[in-house]
Length: 312
Ligand SMILES: Cc1cc2nc3c(=O)[nH]c(=O)nc-3n(C[C@H](O)[C@H](O)[C@H](O)COP(=O)(O)OP(=O)(O)OC[C@H]3O[C@@H](n4cnc5c(N)ncnc54)[C@H](O)[C@@H]3O)c2cc1C
Image (cartoon, rainbow, N blue to C red; front, side, top):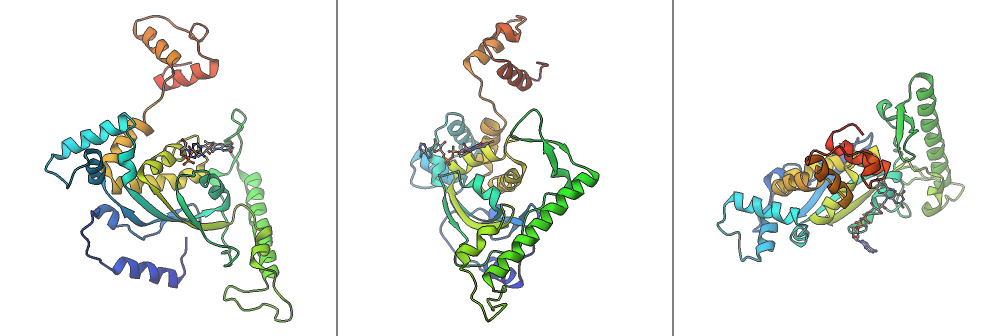
């Protein structure tokens, strides 16, 4: 994730400035404010702004005039209660803004989350970096045989090498074509002064989904947790999960009580259907239930047994 010296200077200048404020700030998040947290081979996530803290959620829920004098344990209980009962609006009182550098195929999944404000780097206006994603060897896997939307065995040896060569060669060729179409180097100077370059908005057409783009992404805490519950989940593709996991760490720094409640009642919790609940009740009563007598499909049965840590 190498940044240019100018980008590093800008970040250092932001981090060097201290602004007095009456608003709530969170020291653990301030510690990493503006800092790029590396993700994948060239990506990053950085928190560039935030509003609110755990106290702001409690204040909103109580519609109070100030921070009050209640004990930490009371605030924690209230946050747990809100999370448990899906009383979500107090969580919408906090906001966070990220700057993210991510491959275009990850951005396509991410942009499906409509409840955020997004401003993307303009490839009509600016030239995209020569940065494309190449999976590290442990993530280079074959198509899964049991799940059409997933990966199977890790590729090895000559097969893995061929895949890596193809990914790199195709991306290098695509970027060389992009530069030739633009007829412009990264400083903006013409490569061949005797011919016009193609418009930037058209020259980008041959770049592949592995190239990196960037955006500012702002959302509220409720919708951030919705995003994380879907994208930090093992069912999400590894590459977007890598971003979500880093963002989970920022959530922990920002609103530690909410983070703990989120893990307890959302991330590490489970939703069980009415038929599933009936099976659990019968099992607890000592009945010997099997799939055929459960009113569950074989797949639902397998999922429930996995949840309960029992052989299907
Ligand atoms: C593992 C996984 C696999 C996926 N596979 C596919 C796939 O194969 N193809 C595909 O197209 N997508 C796929 N998606 C994307 C998925 O269908 C959702 O579009 C994405 O996760 C965003 O979720 P969301 O709509 O809940 O989020 P947001 O857009 O942030 O919306 C949050 C909530 O706001 C409400 N909301 C927002 N906008 C509207 C609206 N216009 N109307 C009504 N309610 C609204 C809904 O309650 C929604 O849950 C996949 C997602 C995951 C996590």
